[in-house]
Image (cartoon, rainbow, N blue to C red; front, top):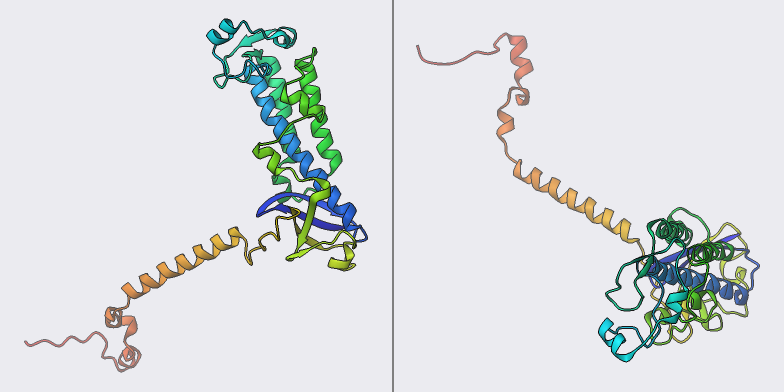
Amino acid sequence: MVLLHVKRGDESQFLLQAPGSSEVEELTAQVARVYNARLKAQRLCSEMEELAEHGVFLPPNMQGLTDEQIEELKLKDEWGEKCIPSGGSVFKKDDVGRRNGQAPNEKMKQVIKKTIEEAKAIISKKQVEANVCVTMEMVNDALDQLRGAVMIVYPMGLPPYDPIRMEFENKEDLSGTQAGLNVIKESEAQLWWAAKELRRTKKLSDYVGKNEKTKIIVKIQQRGQGAPAREPIISSEEQKQLMLYYHRRQEELKKLEENDDDSCLNSPWADNTALKRHFHGVKDIKWRPR
């Protein structure tokens, strides 16, 4: 199996294994699916952290309004009255004005937070350092864990306009957001390796050969964005070590220059006639007038 280190720009994303005989068309779609699913899990983790702190989403027409404005306009959060967390709620006002402030109690909050940590560990970029490959099954498992935690804490469900529910139902609207710019459609995804685009009509082995133990760095890119930047000759960590070595070497040379004097030549061990005088018995003779 060929090991693919997938990057977006200069940032590592995940490791993926694929046979050398894989069609690039199928491989590109697989990489894009895992990449987008990880983004979905990250968005869910972010929103669920807010859910644990401030409760469910307010209706769109109530978001950003003060309590006085809501009362003046006679607006009512009907879904907020239905979506009560298990064990009751604790009021914690959302300063941003996106959520209703009816947060779950401490026990239920910990259920959500623990699940978020477990999901983040599955999709973490640290999996690359640990040499762990990420599959679509692993990402789906993380999504299922997040869905299960929400169902435990909110058995009545979430409002239909809550971004968490919309993510689970694949109805999320990311238009005009930074999160939307990060998503790459499968049909528009491109893989690049060694400054070459992997053409969808070819096989992976056409580029990397038939050695199944090959490891390559591929970069996922949206069609039309051009070729991504090439990989640096040395990594940032290697560059730091190299600079540290030369700094230490420079300090050593400075110390040698400061100690570059001939005072040591007056020491007894530096006298090249000491052995001769020792055998002649004229050692330690001092000349001074009487």
